[in-house]
Length: 132
Image (cartoon, rainbow, N blue to C red; front, side, top):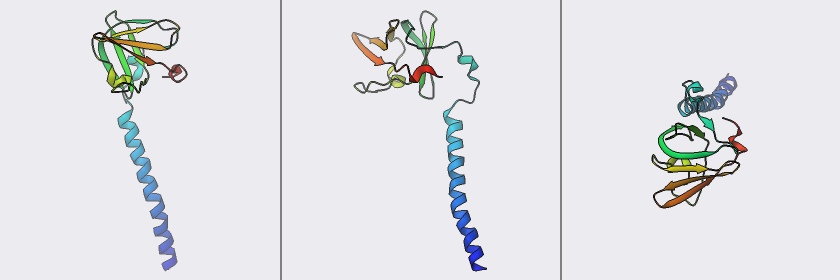
């Protein structure tokens, strides 16, 4: 009888932590990823190598670690995570500001930001940006 009780308790020592871990992951995923319909973001163009970009940022939105920027020329772009560790903050998500000028040449992998008299750049990894 004691052996059966011990085996049942041993079972719960394994199942309960795994269940708690699964619930924690589910709650995290629900809070991290937008539950709203992403179809309203279809008007945003994903930056690709062929994309040409030139304008002043008038609006910024964030979805997880992606940046959605609206330019003064009515273009809208979806920018996947970009980093330049020489800047503070190093990620594009926190770095970009309203009234920044952004520029990217066609067939180029560099996105430039002009702020005041300074010019900043972020390198785009097109392999990772191929999916939304």
